[in-house]
Length: 326
Image (cartoon, rainbow, N blue to C red; front, side):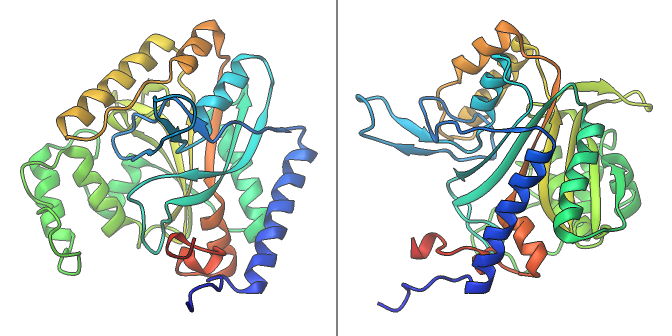
C-alpha cells in the first residue's frame, strides 16, 4: 500500500502547528477563553445545505451526530454567562469533497458578547492580517457586490432576470456529468445567486474582501434588519481571500421563538427535497429562552486560512491525511 504518506509536506505541517499557536496567543492576549464542547450530539444542523454524519452504538438505540459546527454548544455556554470564548476543533460534513473541501476539517469559532457584526469584522481582520500580513481590505455589501460584477440587485430583481443572467454568465461545460441542469425550474433565487457568486463573482472580487448584508433567505442564525433601500437583510458577513471563503459570521439571533420558526422552515425544505430531517437542538432553544445576551460570532476555516498562507491550491496540501487516506 503506497498511500500511507501524508499529502501535506513536513514543512506545511510545521506551519500548521505555528498557526495554531498564533491563534491561541491572539485570543489569550485579548482575554478570550478557550473552550471545548462535544463533537457528538443528539441533535443535528437543520441547514438545508449541510449533511450531518450519523453515528450508531454510542448510548442506546437513538443515533448521535458528528457536529457540523460547535455553534450550538458554544451558545449554551454563552447563555450560562461564560463571556467571550473561542474553540479550535474538528467538524464533519457529509458529501463535501473537492479541492476546497474535506468531510473532516478544522474550524476556529469564536463569540463576542456586546459586539455586532461590524465590530467582529474588525477583529477577524486583525487576526487574518496577523497571519497573512497587511492587505488592502475592502468591505462590500452583498448588493454592491452583485451590482458591480453582474449588474443585478440580488434583493429585488425578479427570478427570471436571475435565470437569464446565470444562463448568460455561467459556463457549465466543465461540470461533472449527471449534474442537474442549472437552469431548470427547480432552481430558486438563492440557487441562482450562489451560481453567480461562485462562478462569476468570486474569481473577480478583490483579493481580501468582506461581504455583508446578505439576503434574508440566507440569514441562517443572523438577525434581520431593514437596510437603506427598504429591504430586510441578514446581518451576516463572509470574508473572501483570493476568491476563497475563509470566514462566515453573524450578529447573532437571540430570539428563541424566531429561531424555532427558522429551524422548522429548514426542516420543511429538507423534507420537500427528500433529505434527512434530523432532531432539533432543544437544549439550544432552552438556553436561548433562559437568556442569550447580544453577541456576534464567526466560524473561520483553519485549513483554508493555511491554504492562503502557504499558497496552496488544494486542501490536500495542508492536511496530513485527507478522507481517502484516513
